[in-house]
Length: 191
Image (cartoon, rainbow, N blue to C red; front, side, top):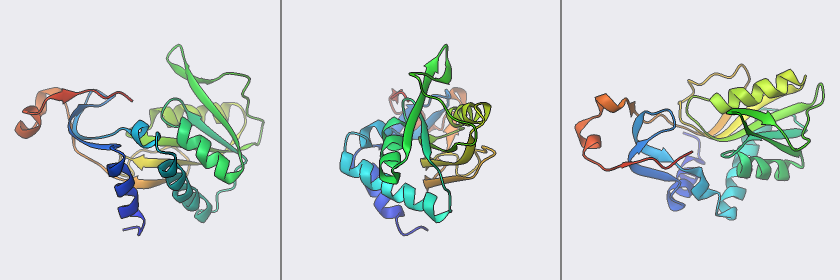
C-alpha cells in the first residue's frame, strides 16, 4: 500500500466525500459507497494537498505536459489546482448536446502535451471523450491523472493512467440488490 493512502482516505472521509449508504450511481447501478468529490472541493486545503499528491505521481512517472484538460463538472477544481501547481495552462471541456466539447475559445495545438485530470472514474466515459478531443486536435496525450479510480484499474484509456486511490466497491443492478443494501433508503447524489 502506498504510504499516502491513509492520509488520502482520511481527507475523503473528513470532508464527507466518501459516503456509505445506498446510492444509485450515474450508470444506474446501486452501491453501498459513493464518492462525492464536490464535498472535498469546498475545502481548498484538501484540494491543494490532493493535487500535490497527484502531481507527485505524475512527475514520478516522468510525464511532461504543458496543458491540463479537465471535464466539467467533476474535474474542474482538481484540474485547475494541478495546473496551478504545475504552472501549466488549464482548459476544460463541457457538455453541449450531451457530448463534451471545447468551448469558450479553448483550443489545443498540434503536438501540445496534454494531461487529462478527472476526479472519480468508474467506467471512464468522460475521460475517453477528453482524450478524443485532444487527439482530434492533434494534441499529444501525456496521460490521465485521477483522484479516484473506482474501477480498480480496469478502465482502459489507451494512455498511461495514475490515481491516488484505486478502489472497487461492489455495484448491483436494481433487481439484484443484497438484502442489507435493499433495506437502506436510496440516495441519488448526482455526479
